[in-house]
Length: 198
Image (cartoon, rainbow, N blue to C red; front, side):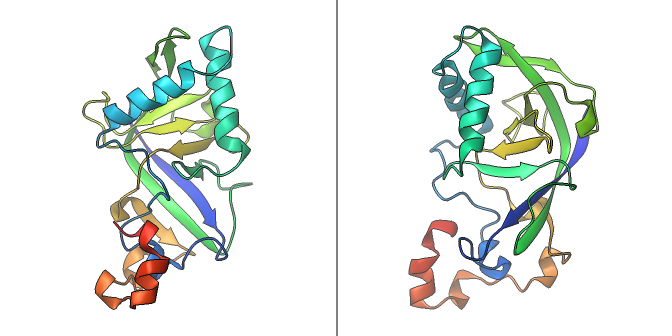
């Protein structure tokens, strides 16, 4: 059953620009994987998982989950499904993923696949690492997330999140954040923030 995920992300001003610049192109990744669709991203993700050490799929998924959480990855955007104990920083974002479909991992250790679709709506119901789409199939989805069975039930995305999925930053809706356009930026700002502007 689809659900609406409300997710949380905190960003430090030492690393990330303020939301008026940060959100000009939505919430972007620093070095995204070169893939145009959720299906292409899934193919990359499943290859990465299958390369991990482990005697079975569960151990390989756990190894890749640990790799993602060990430190920030330039191709990944981490969020938390639980507000309590989630990321908190200079810029606290709330993200909504409507029509979210959750799946456990399936397939084999050498060929990971989408497993059982979950009928859950709360992070407390999660009992293993999972996959997040916003459709019932990879081909129809525009979202791909790796859900972690941690205390905060983190979800890592492998693509930029469009502005329409950002509900707020520090309690303000995007239309109240004064988001700039590229034309508003100085030459130096365009150089400095080029990685975030697509």
